[in-house]
Length: 332
Image 1 (cartoon, rainbow, N blue to C red):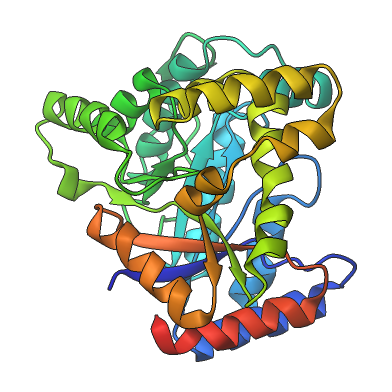
Image 2 (tube, rainbow, N blue to C red):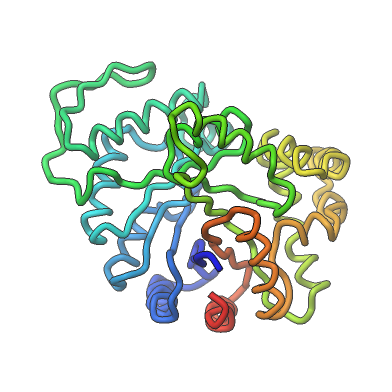
């Protein structure tokens, strides 16, 4: 079976001591990685620095940081420093986020996200190689500066959270990894075709790209309750996160359902929108059941081409996080 990691070890209402304890436990039990994202709560890098300080082996990564939130120079300094601090355990997960977050929260214009991502990656590669950062781009022009500490390695892994055909093609061309969300085994042929198209352009293969989806998990015998807890998450992405996830649901075979969900969500009927998320949509994109059943479901992902799964918890208390980490450990 492939590798298993954890996404967002931040139980509601707890302090950072709890997160660090869970990170230490995950490392002791053999989990492969811990990733932290950011939107409008804690930043990812400070969070990962805490985890890096109390662990020795487990990989750490961002999933994701938006390229609009930092200059490329600041992002390069931070990412390369994280890799040094963690002795080469870090990978950088990037995304564009969305118009609402970027414009209403960060105050930046959400313009040409793919071109901006490409420019950032070019800059980051130069910085990782220790080159002088002379860069004339569409968004940034820099000159003379060079980061004044040696990178831990010249090939810091860069993963991209991509969803649209054009972004998937760019991921295949440029990235070391792909960070999908709502990955549905058996329904991803269009996404893989675009990844391969980009990889072919760069003389690479799909084997050069680590496929690392984040997947919600509910370890429980009460499956009906778990399904009902997951429905609002899916409805939020379809109706509240722009058009990309709505269009993506069409590509994986849930077009009619997504249309109805989005209509209700945009009309502020969020309860009805969640109710319209079908059991099939939930079971196609989440892990639900006993530890043994969740393990069997994970195998479908690995058989479909996934290299590592990052488990996402939706538990109200830290004890729920701990129980899942411990109960799934024998199956990783």
